[in-house]
Image (cartoon, rainbow, N blue to C red; front, top):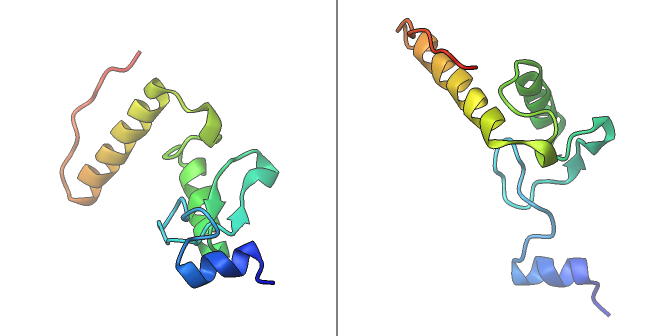
Length: 96
């Protein structure tokens, strides 16, 4: 008898969720939930990238508890970072 895992693999159905960092299909094999995050990553390299993004506050610490306000703040930080790397000085924004 073929297991469900093997059957999905034969039919081309992913057995794992995609990696939250690189987006690799069927790549979310490793879990970052042991330190409180609910992210799924495919490798140690993606885990280190995720950890760096969390430390720089570019990604919410806990995927389950993200709010619209947090996501907007994170997006503003990402856009500022992109402007700085392009050599453009971003204007100050006021966020309460």
